[in-house]
Image: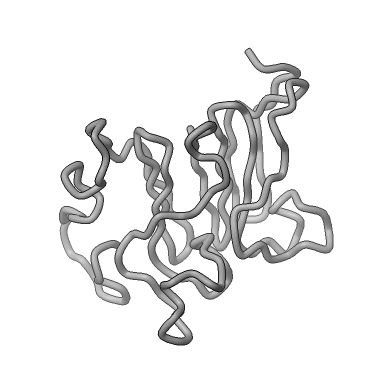
Length: 168
């Protein structure tokens, strides 16, 4: 996945230009530090705590709101070029870890909050039994000083997380 190669087979590794340090548009020499993939989508985490996504967006996998400019031209089911996933308060609490599964994702922030989005029909999103779809990143656990999420790992139909009772 990456730079407009949606639906194509890429037989060998190739550079994704939009995620190269010169294109990330930050003065701090930002770089991709983690990559995770779902069934038909990919997430990229940068050293500045920003998350980019590409691939299928039929079930909210990319975390983009329906009003996002990507959808202004009509019904879009795939995004070929990595696009920034909007999060609340990323300047104060950047993302520190990412995990993906078939059609959903979870991220942990540096202050210990947990966000999820995508399609999880068996409670995988952690947002209650009745919430199967979260189009945008939605807070599951906030960093209120009593709980701290250290890391998260998404499985096909389950999630495992490492939680602490207080912020270190």
